[in-house]
Amino acid sequence: MRLAVAVVCLGLGASVATAVATEQLTSFRIVENKAIPAALTGRPGDAARGLAVAADRALGNCLACHAMPVDQPSQGDVGPDLRGVGARLTEGELRLRVVDPKIVDAQTAMPAYYRVDGLYRVRKDLQGKPILTAGQIEDVVAYLKTLK
Ligand code: HEC
Image (cartoon, rainbow, N blue to C red; front, side, top):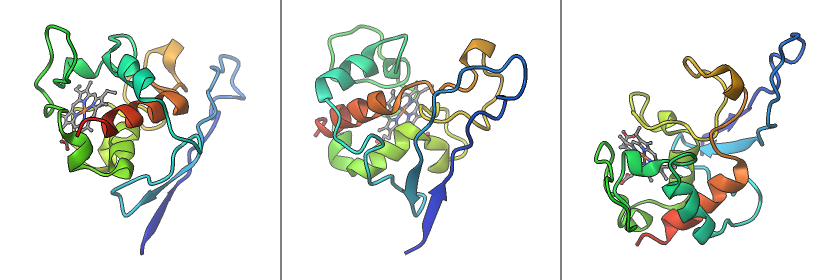
């Protein structure tokens, strides 16, 4: 089995006077460009918190592009309806989707929620920070798993 190891570079700007605070990204292993089998935090997330993160317009903002089984108006249709996604994809596939969907499809419109390098025109105050923390990623994955 071919294993790709994702090594996340930390604090590239650390020696510059204007260094930004970087959340230390945890390293993780991507298997066959398809899945991240192990939880980033080493333990399962919480589905209820994950729903809150996914639905929060200032955090996951998944509703901008996806329909989800929540009672909220204006759900997007740029991406597929997330109902049933927990049956379509494995936990590891779901995790890679949220961490860095560009690995699955380089052309995707979906943002990488746990990545700090190779991004385009990142707001200064957000540079070096992933959109979600490792714990929030795990909570979202736990929520997606419930969408059977
Ligand atoms: C800017 C639009 C956008 C946002 C925001 C977005 N997605 Fe996506 N997502 C997509 C698109 C488009 C796809 C379709 C496949 C592709 O292009 O990669 C997708 C695919 C997916 C898939 C795979 C679905 C399947 O049936 O195979 C999952 C899971 C997913 N997104 C979860 C999320 C979650 C969770 C969030 C919020 C944390 C989110 N997405 C935010 C655009 C988005």
